[in-house]
Length: 171
Image (tube, rainbow, N blue to C red):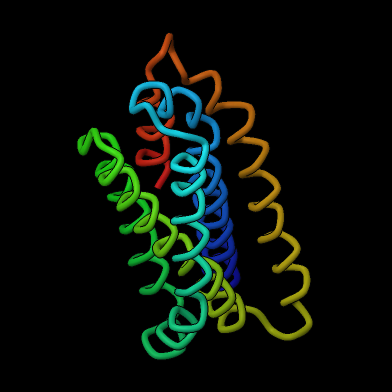
């Protein structure tokens, strides 16, 4: 039905918002995390690279998974992973925990695009797919705007936990 397709589009777009906020939550808090844990610029950069590496590596397998089990189930798995990953960072309180958290977050986030593509391609006709893709793309731009406007406001004093907690709640 038409309402189900637009619900699917809304969920897929929200997935893109979660992807963007997950990507950008660490850069927002990196200075505070580096100060607290005494990280060098290289170590701090490694936390960003851990996300990017696993995000990249998971793309093709995630596409195969989405084709096999469907976009909805793949998106559910990816959002579950993205929800849990920041908790490792928050409660781990170490560079190793932060690194593991960012790598897991990247893998979860890397499954969102293949899941969304599968969802849209199975929900919209070829005539509607480009329009639906355009709406999906607003989730990416919207996520960056949301992350850059909201996450810095959530840093209260020298505490970097709240932006990560926001990512958990959003997911």
